[in-house]
Length: 248
Ligand SMILES: Nc1ncnc2c1ncn2[C@@H]1O[C@H](COP(=O)(O)OP(=O)(O)OP(=O)(O)O)[C@@H](O)[C@H]1O
Image (cartoon, protein in one colour):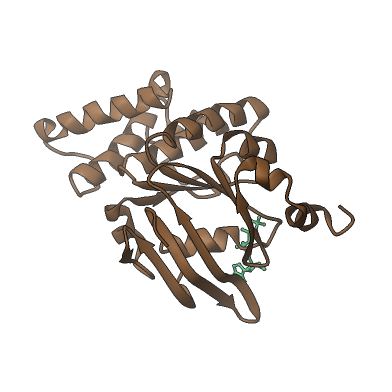
């Protein structure tokens, strides 16, 4: 299989549960691929394996045709594979700017030091402002992260993941707990990012998935049961049954 990133017969077993079962998946260099499926389908487990959080039981993950199976997360981030989590993971008492600046510095300067030579920080500061502007957070730059509205905190998390210059970005339920207007805002942002890089989205909000995805992969009981465009997935009988039961 080709593309930017792909998996070959990927499996992950927890005791008697095959959380990921023979999954062959691939994504291109840009565009938005959503992974959907009922609760417990194996979406988060799949992302956890591909981003190095947990090990695969068998099978392979290839990135730019190189085997990266079971590579630690920090190594994957260096190669351009980044992710966000279902729960907030910000430095709450630091400003929006500092949260993002530290993430950018880690990428550019290779260290998390808060105090550094001013000269060395110049390009980092420039990049930080550019990212804040792209994500619409510039007016909140001086606020402590904990004072942001929940939706803006999730946007900041996306910004932090973007600070690593990812080639591929995995987003795990970015709209969880958001209001409809916050959901709309982050959907636009995700769509915009997917014009430049490959974005893989795990999401329960079907309206959003159908509206912004280029491709959709459907998991059930750890297996891929369908793949296609939003239109194809909407009309797929097996997908309807997975969500609504055989009566559908
Ligand atoms: N660490 C673990 N130990 C044991 N079983 C696990 C573990 N993590 C996940 N599972 C099981 O693996 C299966 C897939 O779980 P996973 O969280 O990947 O599904 P999901 O599609 O992300 O679900 P949701 O939409 O509810 O977040 C489930 O049966 C779950 O109970």
